[in-house]
Image (tube, rainbow, N blue to C red; front, side, top):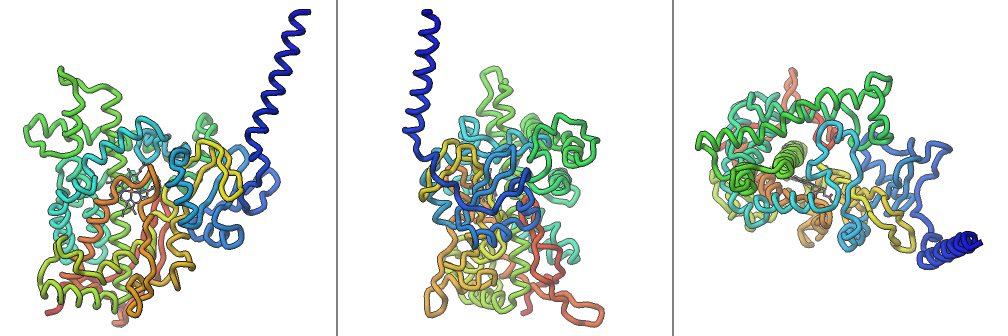
Length: 501
Ligand code: HEM
């Protein structure tokens, strides 16, 4: 009898508690954000774009609005933000709950589980970000400027001394050499450099494995436990095959630093610094610290290289397709610096038109069109809509950068748009090129300086011109981007030659 009373009371308490909880969160009755109608069993699976997702989502947002909802059965909801204001409201003003990352099952299989970019929000992420900040803060980046300027001059020398088919190699090398100097004090001198080769191999494998976060393994992570030879498991096969190379990429950063330390040739740089700073009195490094040094360094390497390379290549394409802009920027450089001078970072505030080109290259063809997805850890309400806990939140930077409300003819390359009237349209610089809130890019100051000095040095020293076909006609490339982990111009032909006197 007593037991029945206890059970009945417990039941009543439970019912009351549930009712109380419902009363406390009446918002669960609120509508979800609008989105395309889900299909039976598949949800929105077939509406998720596999190519050029930024533009496809932008088109969809015209119908469903700047906060859009999609759902694939068995997966967390996806919220796509297409306006700067919505992204700032959520990812910045409410960053306490919007700073986690969703799982990237395939990248984990590759061996990137502890890379800064993919870490969940928490202590380990904070540690990585602090480590990055010690070498990449705005202030510390001033110390890297002379190295970046030297790399920009090397870039020009390499481009002028090589056939057009090698241009991309040297733009890539420019980006890698800057990162390896910060990580290890290692300057890239040849095409056969181990870091260049590693980076190219790993990138090719990642691209080959399918759309980032959108492969069958990401959609159905339990498939990781299935044999990889089964039909449809190709992404897992690729990741598994390249796992040792990714592992080597982590190890080589540490072993190179240790070798240099042993030989007394280590120069002040990221990996040697943390190897020393984190070891105990007996010279030992904890397993945890070792993982953090390796994986924060690999994150810098992989996040910093393709993005910077992509932007330099986009700049060259933009100058090729817009010779009048190229000329105007060069005239400005000549007027401010005098012809034949090499620009320095001190010249930057005096080159407003070049600044417009810099802004427009980022906006015109975003290198990270969807940024990196965030994850919201608690249920939230925004503009009367319910954002479920655990949703993946995608900031569609491409849609924001091409928002017709702020940018007229948004897909056109028009650097003047930022100049005040009457010369321009007084359009705003896009402030979220590097993402949002507590997950904002840790390499933004380094990247800004790399891209700017590459642009300024190239314009001051070279002319970027159309290649010609056998009949002597200009080959005019179409503007088109490849969309992989990041976006990169599709291969295009051009000729880079020294400036005419
Ligand atoms: C022009 C080049 C670059 C662009 C456009 C770019 C853009 C971005 C964007 C949009 C994000 C996502 C931010 C978010 O989640 O809201 C990001 C994250 C990140 N970037 Fe960059 N980035 C560039 C260069 C670099 C460089 C040079 C480094 C390092 C040397 C770097 C390291 C990182 C890291 C580690 C993250 C992840 C931060 C985290 O998850 O907390 N990036 N970047």
